[in-house]
Length: 185
Image (cartoon, rainbow, N blue to C red):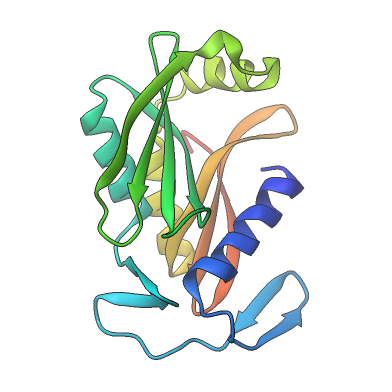
């Protein structure tokens, strides 16, 4: 995961999951946030809510909707009126994108496709390698959520010394944790 993407995920999580008035203290690479009171089923996000549940559930929802596709990217965004997840999948030379409302976990924008050939060469290479990996992104997310003790807000493909790995950003106790999962290990 590039530094820009991680920074975007960090800022998105801070802005989308906790109120703007939350106190933030820098502790190295982690950000501690005073968490607001929450109900058993939801975490406050200011005027809207983010439903509890695994990021793996969102991935499985998208894969069910796009039969035969494999999700390779999950990203929380707060652009617009409410937070939403963009889920990207690959199938038969096409890249599909679905928007899922973070509060309701319902698809709010149907799948849109575009040719994978329109992607940059590095992403095309990553998708080709992803096709040879047995592990699904949802499995990597479940592992990361268990290790990180929280919920995934971002997950995707990344190169580590020319090997393809999954990088998952998990929110746990007001802290963002970046967890790398090596496929097929």
